[in-house]
Structures are given as structure tokens and as C-alpha cells.
Amino acid sequence: MKTLRTALLCLLATGCTYYENEPVKAPVPEKSDPTTTLEAKYVTEAPNKVTSKYWKTADYLPLTEQNQVTGQVQAADGLFNMSGTFGGLTSFGKGKDPDVRLQAAYTDDSLYVLVVWKDTTADASHSNWIYDGPTDPNKAGSTSGWTSQRASDNFLLSFDMGSGKRDVWNWSLALSEPMGYAIDMIDNGSGATNDAGTVMYVRNAVSDNRGGPQYEWNDAQQQLTRKPAGSTILDPGYFLLNKKTFTGDIVAGEAYYQLECAPCHGPTGNGEGTPSGYETGIRVNEPGQFNRWTRAALDEFGPGPNHEGSVHYPAGETDRVNLFARLRAFSGIPGYYLQNPSGSSADIHAVSSVVIANIPHYNSKKYTVLLVRALNTSQTDDITLNPATVTYSFNFSVRDNDLINQVGSNNQTLTFKPKP
Image (cartoon, rainbow, N blue to C red; front, side, top):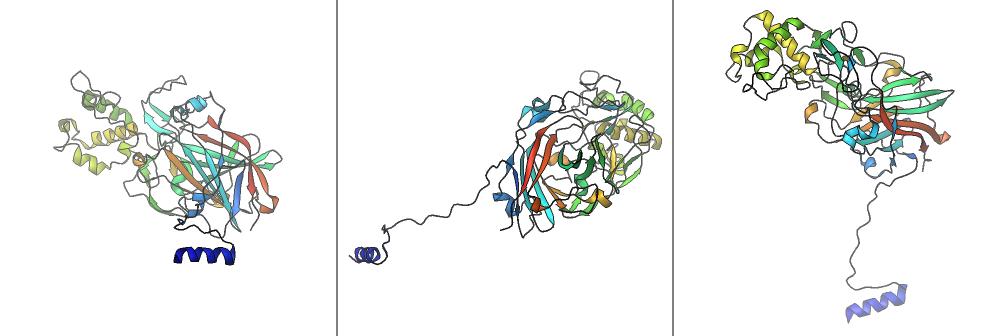
């Protein structure tokens, strides 16, 4: 009776609806919803990490990708296997939808853009040096001797500056991510060029694309502190920061390898030895593999008990230097070395989900990259973003192991939402 009396008093006094033992419902959590423009909302706390709470509920712009500039290969001599997206969407990620999604936010002084897309492999090379490398299925020409091969995963976000100019933000796994930036470029209608200042990558070449590398890793741990991406170690299999002059006679090293090592590891280093019955299945042409070895470590392992071919490891110092050069040339010596950028080339900071200390162990099948740039850099080669202007037109494209062909969507809109 007490419960009924309470209910009657509630109804009479307040007009409330009373249900005995009514369950308490939990609040519905916020969630991300798709939008038709890239909406940048004003925030007082900078979402400067890919794991920042803001990105979990911010609305996103889904892109329907289209083929862009497919069916082309690098024309310059010595460049091979750099057209991974040659067939557009049918080639990208082995035909799987990249499912690109963009989110944005802004503070009083900066714009934050989060880019998420799917990719089946992490390609972190850019014009790497390979000796007697594989042929290119999309391009004729000899790949004997030194050639520059492989391309990096990357994307392009470009804003219309008017007068036929575009401000291009180019994130590259090989060239910019290790240093914690995106490449800042400007396109005046005849192709994108780097902004003023010191760029973060320099060609590692003696001469042209067939001349071979000038530098190799110097065996010292490649550690650096990046802002706002934090401290990291760079995988020497793919990235060259601490360098020394490349040594060894590659021709002599190739001759020694074919005589002593190829019977077990195969003429091309693929583990398929000759004659039949000598196949070890142990590849020496894994990307990056021998860029991580120091000479001291190889000299300890080569003639040791854990190496079945120890009797074939060279005893003389000259042969050892030459063989080590050959093994690194199987792995693909980085085609560029890295340095800290300055000036307008250092305007766009980047944070990502990639574990660049060990690229082969990055197997998430998805990239998450956060770009951070000042609304106004005071640089003439950059677009000034004024939230009061409300909207800006941009293009977006993403590449999979490719330097020319891409998939993406043009004529999208960045919308600045008013402050609360």
C-alpha cells in the first residue's frame, strides 16, 4: 500500500507518470556521423593526437574515390616499379576500397585534419637503390646494374588559393612521416614544387637514377624528437638519417655472391638455390633486411655455427666489404636521406599511427594520419585559413606504392563551423 500511496501522491502533486521498478536508461553516447562537407568545429583543447577524445565522436566526410591519372609510369631512365596504382581502384590495396574518411577541428590559431584510409601493405620506400633488380611489368627497359625502384604510400590534400594556384599538403610514409611533417608544396598550374626553406629529404645518389647510392646507414641508432609527434626511432631498413659514405665494389660483390652464395640463396636472392636440392628457402632480398645489419654483426654471424653456409663467408676484408655492399643492394638502400626542415617547408606537422621503428611489424591495414597547420603561417606560398570565411575548396587523393597514379575526389569543401 505504501508504494501505491507514493504513486498517487506523485500523480496528484506533479502530474508525473509513475512506473514501479522502471529501469534507469544510460545516456546514449555521441557517435560520428557522415557529413557532406569536411566540418571543422571549434575546440578549446587541441586534439593533437590520433587518439584524442575529440576524434572518437567528430563527424566525418566519407569520400567516394575515383581513378585519377591512371595508366602512367615514371618516364625517367632508371626508375622502375613505381606505379603500384597503375590500374587505379582495381590496383589500390589489391582492389579493396580505401574507404577514405576525413575529420577536422580548429582552435584559435591552428587547423587539425585527421585522415583515415585502408591499405593492405605499408610501403615505406622511395626510389630505393637495387642492384640487378626485378623488371617492371608496366615499363620496358633493362634493370641490370643500379636502378631506383619502389614507391611510398602517400596522400595529397590541396586547397584552392585562387588565380590558378593550389596549396598542396603531401604526406609521405618514406619522406615526411619519419620527421613528423607533411611536405608543404605549391602548385602554380605546372606541377607542385616544394615551399621555400630546407626540405626534409635529399636524394641519396652519386649521379643519376642509375648511379648508385652515395650514403648508407652508419650503424648508430636513429633516434629523434619530433613535435608534436614525440620521440621515435627510425627503422634503418627503410629510413636513412645517420649516414656514412657507401663503400664496397658492387660488381666484385655481385661476382662473389654468385660464386659462393647463389647456390643456396638463389641468383636473385629469393632462396631458390641451384642446382636443385640446394634450395634453402632463406631469402636475402627481403626489403630493408640488410640495411639493419651492421658489418660487425654480419662478420660475427657469417662464419659462425648458426650459418650453414659459414664456409662460404669470405675470409678476406676486401671480399667482406664487397659482399656486404651486395647484400645491402638486395635490400634496397634508401633513395633519400632525411634532415630537419626549416622555413615554409616546416609548416605542416604530422602525427600518425605508423610504428616507424619497425616497418615490417606495422600490419594494421589502416592508416591514421593527423595534420596540424597554423591558420595563418604568414608565408606567401601558403593559403591563409580564416574561419570567418566559412568555406574552402579542396581536392584529396591517395596513392598506394605509386608516385603518379592515384585515387581520390576533387571539389570537396572544408566548412568552418562558428564558435559556440
